[in-house]
Image 1 (cartoon, helix red, strand yellow):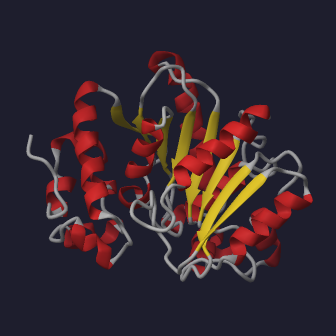
Image 2 (image 1 turned 45 degrees about the horizontal axis):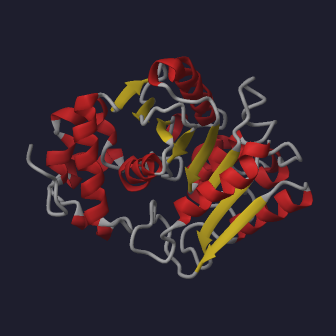
Length: 315
């Protein structure tokens, strides 16, 4: 099996036979996938702050594990939704990962695959949810997909030897989705599902108000994007209660896409309600580091796991 390198064309990744079940979701934005196939992994740095070597290594591991069944993709009922499974078994807890993309796409190549494998290396099972985006995202749909993904995972836990304790981990707009899932009004309780032990929020969109990411708000709220009541309903800082799970949050102080104020609003809301949290500010202005290998944010996964162990297991 020829190994992917940073010079590998995206075409070869998209058309890799082991990746056939999720071929259309590998490259984001999806509408430009055909054009972007001419680029190499290292060329992704023109669009996203990715580590090309780490990305190539992750893809190689996924190909090998696809053959032994410890990595696979399963579509869910709603069109263009599904679950990537990265199984280590052992009855270990799992992390449900929600990559970002401004509710216009799900950037698993940038923020999902490497992150899942790094959680695996620390002994945790990992799953990535491919949730509803674009014109049909409209408010509740992405949370519906999280519920469907968890239902699928819980149903398979015994077969895969995966524990039912879990945390959610979200990036950017996926961070908004993960944070919503941790609230009773928008997430786990609304769907009658088990509360996550912790939420890991990576440069998250939190508010739909003044400091929001405009694109995420437009996609999520659609025609109601300018409605103050709708904005308040989906501003996570306004939905936090003392029942929210402990949260680990990290973001660049000068983030050039999502204002750092989002992380501060979440931290303030958690503090006001007596919920344990850790805020990890990172120097710089970069948005989209994902697993953050070779960056000032490197090590956030280990810190997040430590936080989960010290706080989440007590819930």
